[in-house]
Image 1: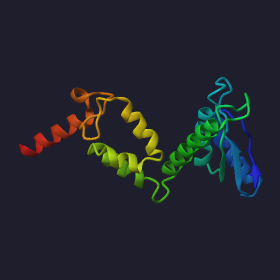
Image 2 (image 1 turned 90 degrees about the vertical axis):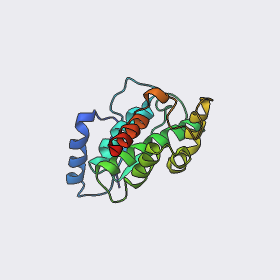
Image 3 (image 1 turned 90 degrees about the horizontal axis):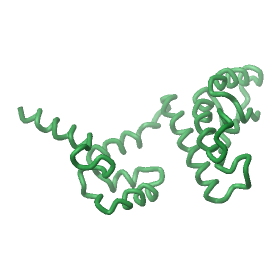
Image 4 (image 1 turned 60 degrees about the horizontal axis):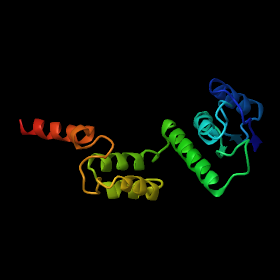
Length: 172
């Protein structure tokens, strides 16, 4: 296995991946991020996840997660969780972009649950359903039976309005 660079501008990731594959005769390649910009200390997990998505899309075999504490301190358990979640998202986004079989299955199911306002199913399908439930419960006006999200409210919910328009057009 070959270790790749940790700091690479976004526009150079594809070239780095292709060069490694050619020079190392296709040996498995793992990258540390890569961190695509250095000006966001405390947010390196997000900056690196952006680079990780591109690296995975262009053929990285393994992504090494980065935490918000990168270059600042030893990571806490919360930092490790934040880094791992960011990199799970990055890897999943790359899998979808690469059209890997089955990579969209849960996404499609959660999209349908969202359209159906099936909050319980959305949380069950979510990568971290507990966090999603906690965020939803912060707005005490939003219930699991509501046919809208609390972000837009009932009057402006695009999903609810789209469903109403679809229902009206089917009655015509």
